[in-house]
Length: 362
Image 1 (cartoon, rainbow, N blue to C red):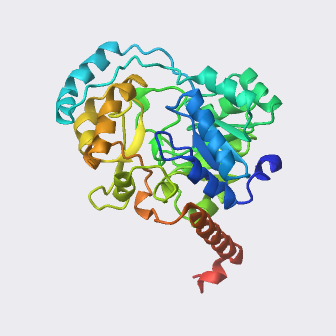
Image 2: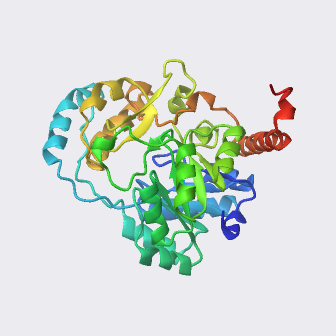
């Protein structure tokens, strides 16, 4: 990885910018203070809300951190499908005693306003999800001293990140929790994602950009594996979701290791875009016919998700989680970084020792 970027965080551990509540300033501060790179999630916030969190984070740590921004989405052609989905969600609306949200609440997530804030009051790192910013945007962020990252789920997307002038690519494997950062939402490709190790290796051969690997990583040994595959650092989301500093709902944290929720799936049920979460009632009942319409479906189901969380009903919440969720540890975020680094060092030492360390190789 670029030495200048690596110098920002001593340990090759990046905390994923989990939108919707988990990636709060105390979590990012704890990770950065422990030698990783903490991140704030600007997604679903106003530009002022993002600015206030940046201000709060700066009051908690003097260490570098990042801010993640969602790219604006193209106009949807699925109006009829969204209307039908709203009709199919009528029972949920009645059950939770709340109206459905307005699917036309906005498509750009305040993109221009957030960029204006980040250019006026720069942060060390800015990352982008759901696409690649224009070259002039990347150049303008570089001029104010920010490093720029962008997510890719395929080699083709990694090439687009490279062409944008970004400093590094976040290689997101299909194991990752939350939304897949695909640049285009192509329904016929649902479930066709690439595992993180294969993705890192493929991107490593295709582009010269530094790589940050993400997807189901929960242990230091897995960090060692993606580093060996060619990544310069690992990004972990679900691993930090259960920490006390995380802003995730308590029922969400508990569900990660609850035997009631043994597996994850990619679903469009909550947002209209493929996202990996713990399989619950809402996902089972509505996932099969949820339309490919983001952010319309996200806006539509927002009141339902809020009501389910208020009722502490995990069966109606969006329980985003990666495939390694059962390995979640209830540790303070700073301590978790320390444990991950120790596990990474142990894995590297075992690798360096070779087969002899494991006994007689026959």
